[in-house]
Length: 528
Image (cartoon, rainbow, N blue to C red; front, side, top):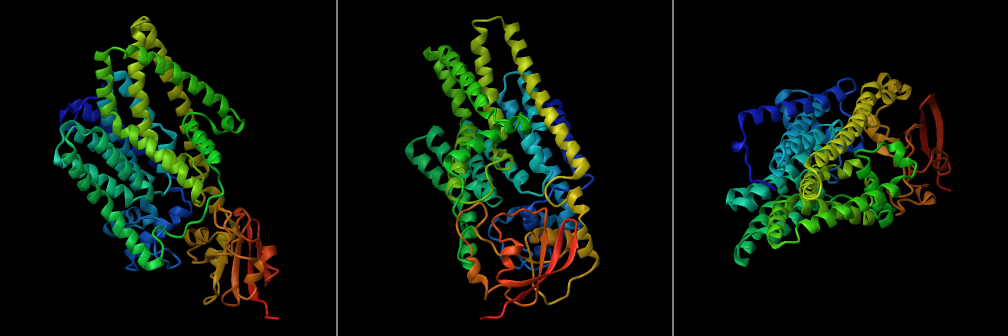
């Protein structure tokens, strides 16, 4: 049964224990990033560049000078604020900031688990599962906005539950504000607006007039800030969320990606690669079906049915958010091109899923105790918990070793630090007033402090939508001649034209060759 427990009702011993767990989580992230720093990806570079430009007084713009629209503002603004206060660069602050938020995530998760648990053993298991979770740890070692977003998701669930239990206006405001801040951190935060509206409609115990009033208040507080930001985007760029293209992944592809991402929480990637996903789905479906039958038998009576209804009502926020978020992700990634669904995109539902699984496991255990000895049930649950935690611990240990040996992400690891092309560019500046193109401009900016543009693309990223026709580029690229083309061999972006293809529309000559790439001079071909 879910209990309406607040932080004020927790004992000092509980608080110290939670604080120690949170500090352990923060220390884990700092350990993973102590050698190479926060992991970096193209999104990370965008956040860091925007934060640096904001500190420099240039506004929220990328390293190319383009207005930031493809990501919301809150994470780079937060980095810029800490950078302005401390005087440290946003890049060096990213691992510290994310370690802090991971610690807070662990703390809030433990509070929520404590509220949803009727056993100290379930509480310990749930908290440990969050502390050593693969998806939460992996997104927290990267310079990504996910830790901040997940923090707001947990606040949303926490205040939503208090709001449903006590009905206070203060909880409604905080519940709404959490959704608003999540939207300003990641655009997928709109799922919190949808979830919040549904929570009010389904679970608020008031008449329709009060529900409608609360719905208006929630909608205004949660949606207006994002609305202002998207209007600003449209004024600057003519788009609300930056340029978007159609996806190349089908609905079936995205369902498969989703299942694989969930199983990757406790199953090694190599096992998933061998095609055991279908077996796992079948086993999970059978287990869920059997558990549902057992719970149905337990709650067949009216008295027990009322108890289940009350439990489900207070478990509503994590259930609704998980369903809407996951469904939105699958549908949107089928219609719109972005990264395929993976551990990163599904990380915000990890803690809600833990809450849901623990709550139903407790109900299932109560049902089984009516038919089997309690000691046998406790032993079975203990074995399952130990197996799950050991599997997760093995994954997180391996991930930590990899981070310490070669770094996380694409640009802050051993491979890039030892790049002979990057080392050359750091020591020998390029000739000024020449435009620079590259198949990896993010790497050039974050590693060599060179601003460049992406070389011409055939299609949009993860999309079949055509971007350029090679023959049409003959008189258009490069825009200014001569230009540099810096090409990294370890950056396979299949949607870009190759150097050989570009050589058919421009005069390209190699000036320097390295083990991992080359530098070319590009001259526009004369018009026939």
